[in-house]
Image (tube, helix red, strand yellow):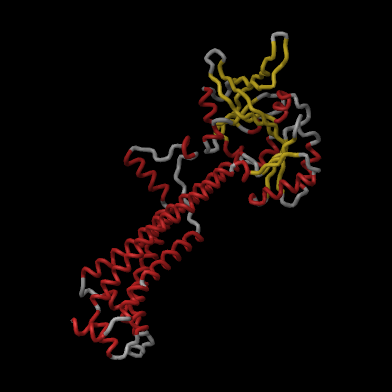
Length: 422
């Protein structure tokens, strides 16, 4: 049955007319509240998941800017013949670059009289090769990578570490390592004076407060490794293939090496983020579900208000399925408009979240993100199309489900009883 020969099903026409009806203003107000509730729930869910995605992406990029995708570390006195091993690693099609490194725990002392000191991770690098496996050169806030020359005994410090030591460009720091020298007076720690040649900032407080970078030859000399190094750092064409690539390279080198990749080193970070994302999705989905189920009360009131209309439609030959379609259409349109409005609002807020947060911070004079707690000082947001589609689809499905019971009640209305009680 069509209306006015225009090919439009009469169920759809009547459902839209009921939605636009102004006869019952309270009912129209309840419909609007249901629509707004769905929109707010969807928007909040999109913003929260976008923040979690942005946090994960920013954390990964900052971690990989100063750490390699994977490492091969020797046991014992270091890795001998690392040049040939590097060539073997580069022959793997998954590996894009490889660089030697020396690493040890150290104590940095800026002023023996004042006692300004800090524990640090001492890393020796080859500046030319390091640029291929990390973005350390791009993170420098003072100095240059070229200042790290073999025999120069210069050091690059994280900004937080330099601040704790109270040193600046050109100052000297004493590096002490636990591998001591045996003397008649006992075992003394091995010491070497280094000149501060620059500082860097990764954006992660944990790295900036603990990392000191020197030339690989100077680190090997301090640790008395000779021509050996601690291991090789690898850059992989696809970072997600790092676990597979590093194991392939280790097997090609004959084994006997300790392998590690970025997913292992930071597994707790990313597992906690993934778990938090899932929990937040299900918790905030309850908000959307509550808003969607408000459609039930809206349609129940609509069915009660339209009892005479239902009875007349049934009397002139409308089937129960047609009555079901009329009220399903009404609820579905409410859910669709609410979902689309929520998607638009959520995407708009998520894409402008950083500027909004900065304005609120200036307005109220507070700082929401403490880098020492959250590892970053900004609130990043990254809108993933897949998440938006999942949220919109789930919200719309809940809205559609909430229309079934009231529509079924309308379809089972007894026309005679409805007219008799009118």
